[in-house]
Image: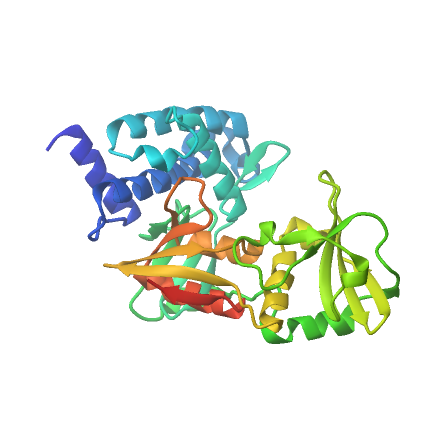
Length: 350
């Protein structure tokens, strides 16, 4: 067995990622992506900080230090393993630095590490239960003593049934918004701080029922053509877009500004899905079940909470930075199917 075969076997066992019928390049792409996430854990959580002694709990690592070392490792993986050119997207140079940077940002986004002022900090290990025998392990899993399955940048404790030890400490994941999507517009209608006011200036309105990405479903607003009921509009300022809900009742027009939280966390996408659902044009996605994996293609973006869970349960497929096309193991498809259903997204099987 050559060096590359021994390394491959070691990586498979360490991260519990196996080919399971996938094409060689698809498997290698998943393996390299997760292996780089494992290196980030080693650099942030590992013994490289041991010289800090008792202060290790407060240790942090400069993001540029991690980026520098990870880029070299990524270049080595790219040279060693068969990976299709298309996976690098517009990065025609197969640049390990760009891949390393993306993995670091995905680790931060999924909550596996924390960034404060360009420093990367450890996150205490905590477990979240999603199904019987299925626990997401976020944070410092290196010294846990458990064999985790790696999916994307995240770690999962996977058992055939409930684990008594983890049942005592695992948290139950709760959604940010627990209002059914069919009731969400009704809730907004009753809860927003409405003011009698017509939009002045240049705005765009979200056109319900339009196919494709929701980011491309905006059209210039004509106040006289405002539909009855609830709508969402946004300012045309590219640098500081402001979003507003608009309610028209006969000739009466009211507005309510959306808090910046809706924009920063992409929660306004939940409103877009709810509006389309209300008008009988639910969002959609396609999925193909091949072997032991589901290949998902979203038609539009998700709110951050749902996007985070999707990334916890999958790998990027078409390109290493793809958030729309994902590869999901069978064991985790139930979590994603329920999540998409809660957003009112219809799943079309190919």
